[in-house]
Length: 105
Image (cartoon, rainbow, N blue to C red; front, side, top):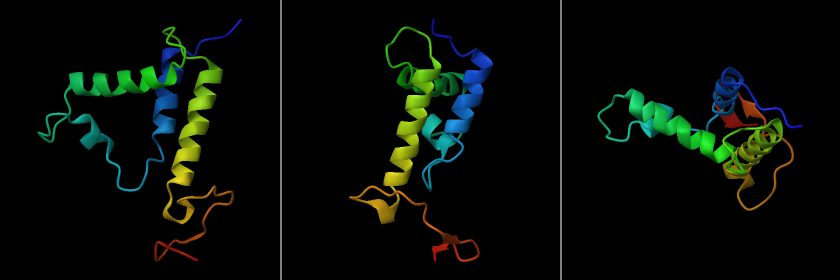
């Protein structure tokens, strides 16, 4: 029997998945559909409903641990592969950064 993730755990998961967005990505700007520099409850709910829909792979209205793990791995791989140094190839090792300069070592 598959266990479903409680709503609070789902909210934490969505937060964790969004904790490391691509550089320059602004979630508030993404949610602000009318571009008035404010996010309404409706805009917030629509944004998160879309994220839920993306995670619910079989569209049964529930997110299982397997679905959650799969989406997390897909997002991790996409973020890794989208780094400029990884374009066109699979990166296996993290890129070391010089924290003070924000540049690769």
